[in-house]
Length: 412
Image (tube, rainbow, N blue to C red):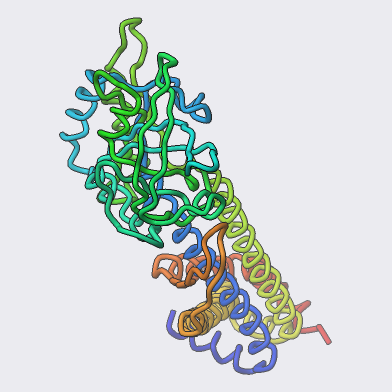
């Protein structure tokens, strides 16, 4: 095998210009794919992190049927206190959960005494909410990064439109599930920067204030947001949790809870799927580039070396050996292209990070792009290129191995 490898390498070096052009084409394809994967993958992970860590959490549990009507924030579909207690006991037994936060979501009227507007509010337990969505505090651009009773965090668009500042007094008027109206004064503790997606324009107040404002006899929860210790286990844990809570039934003997991952709650998931589709398309393009270039160069090599092939076949070289020579040449071209392409891609990724490129996403400005080239992606692309190179060289190699030595020697 070592002898065949030496012969294949010698044959590639005999045609240096063609070998260099082919290897360069493969290298460019590898570099383009790896750079695209590192940048798009980092962009996707950053956006997922922004959405889950500053607003949604990794997954949420609701009363059955709540999400179908979530735009209306129906208080009648909140989880009762007894159901919340049962659910919390289940969640406390799950070692995969890092933090969870109960929320009361409702619509209200927001007044600064001169103007009135609509607002969506979340009643939260501050310490639990900040642990479940740790980037929430970073969205507080003005004011205190805490939330006490009698205080409210106001979304930036509402603050700007109604000229509300930190420490101003505002009035929140809400209708409870029975239709009665109640109002309370709150002090603005901070201004929340906006974020793309549902909930990006929500305000926050203390959980106990929400209970009091809505005149609940017992706290009824709209949802419980959950943060996992390992985000990669999201789907497996979600499926397992669904199986656990499936046994919890209401009085009508129907499922009491429903579980939704962030993917089912955020429109960004469609963008995420589009990024994955684009990445797959780029990978297919790389495959075609390698396949066509290797096949072309190997067919040319066979055509130019017909007399040589006839000579070695005439002196007794087995067809299998001839086939191996050409397959190994394709293998070496793939290896050279993968190694050089990988090194160049790693260098370009470092250059991108040194350049400190920024971009805007919705209401968020000047987000820093941090490109990451994962070893598993580098290994996958390298193996793909090498395998495709070998496959591309098979047809020319088989053609060479099946030549009639007499006809080959007569070739001019």
